[in-house]
Length: 111
Length: 114
View 1 (cartoon, rainbow over the protein chains, first blue to last red):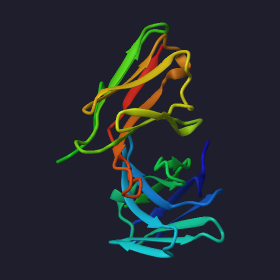
View 2: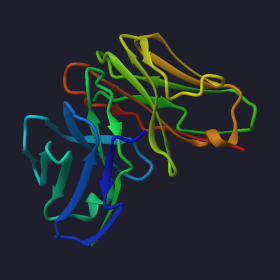
View 3: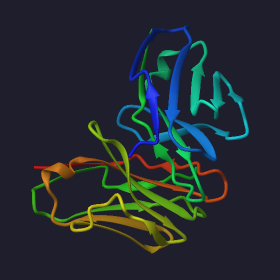
View 4: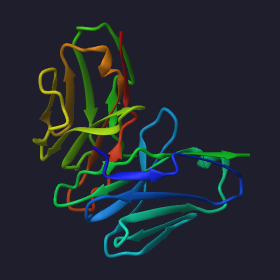
């Protein structure tokens, strides 16, 4: 069963625009991660934010976490056609270290 | 360049046949995951190993699926007998427990059961 649920399911933007994806989850977490999946490939880890952190940056990526609302957002600034992919959030809860994935947001960036 | 290696990349088989998927985790990682990805269900956890011991296989249909780690360099997922509803992409991922749970994924095995 999915712990995280991404929103929107699909997003289509023009190159240079910002893309924002949201993730909501149900139970308390240790950390939340975002992954990218290009078509026909495996998932690639992008960024991890711990439950005691509120914001994290990595290059053009900005992740926020609001544990009171059980939600996270991923912002990709100045998007490029190469950012076209599906983006998944995954939560880690308890001591199992098992990432539990949402269904993902499909992002299309038009050149 | 450390990576998780999965074989085969693609497999087409007839219903009722045995299917074996193999995974070589990243050297030094102590956790291995098997996930199944379908359009309908998304990414589902099938099995989870830590230090080669199976810790969670509750997501796996026990009557036909089995997962093992014969040694630290090999994880296998077997389906016997296979059914058309098993058609999916199967991913193996490895990681290091205690570092936050980041998972490193292989490229997947695309299984088609006809």
